Amino acid sequence: DGQETVLSPMSKKAQEYTEKSLLKKGVKLKLGVFVSNFINDEVHLSDGTTLEARNLIWAAGVSAKTFKGIDDKAYLGRGKRMKTDAYNKMEGFDNIYAIGDASIMTADPNYPEGHPQLAQVAIQQAANLGKNFNNDFRNPQPFSYVDKGSMAIIGRNQAVADLPKHIFIKGFFAWAIWAFIHIMSLVNFRNKMRALYNWIGYYISKDQSYRMVLRPNEKAKG
Ligand SMILES: Cc1cc2nc3c(=O)[nH]c(=O)nc-3n(C[C@H](O)[C@H](O)[C@H](O)COP(=O)(O)OP(=O)(O)OC[C@H]3O[C@@H](n4cnc5c(N)ncnc54)[C@H](O)[C@@H]3O)c2cc1C
Image (tube, rainbow, N blue to C red):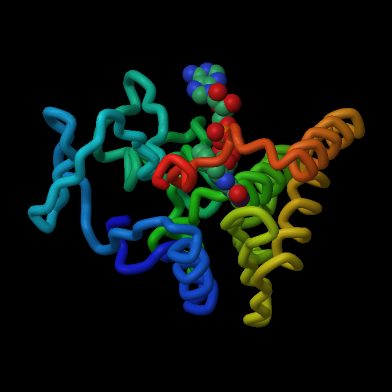
């Protein structure tokens, strides 16, 4: 991770608990270093060290899709997100709006660097812009993000949650809340039931096909 800690947008408690949990699971953490190259089965890091690897899985950030004609740097901010004003109107245009991950808005006083790329931001911006459209922009409401908290799953029975009013939850309870919220956020009853059924199946069977932490075979080691 290029940052000095894991989960940099979350609280210190969440970061410390996550780091400890990952180390306990056998994950090697390299913090404060950037990947600078991948060549001849070697990953080169900014501190001059290298890691041997046949495959490199790139999971470092999302950049927005750009569109011909509005792909000039002047219109785009960090991550190629379209710069928008407080009403999600693209800067420099009268009839183009962008919300969610595709938009970067610096007009919200609590988020001068732009909002995090999260589902809640996209959902709340969609609702606000929809209302403004319905009112034909008479007395339009500027967007203001209501942070309902952040959660991250670490592994089986383990998650962290930063809730409003500095409430921090970790471990099984946070994991259960994470699962509940993600099931409830799915559209329609059928999808909710299908996901719940699959998750219960994975939980009971301990199906590891989705897991990334592979432990060495103890028997083979002798
Ligand atoms: C691996 C991963 C994990 C994440 N985990 C979380 C999490 O736990 N909690 C959280 O809050 N957020 C999470 N996010 C972020 C969250 O998914 C996004 O912030 C959210 O989906 C943004 O919504 P959106 O509608 O702006 O964009 P999207 O959900 O990306 O929707 C954009 C849609 O536009 C479509 N599209 C793109 N180009 C075109 C085109 N030219 N024509 C037509 N359609 C097009 C895409 O196919 C896509 O369906 C995660 C993201 C990733 C990648």
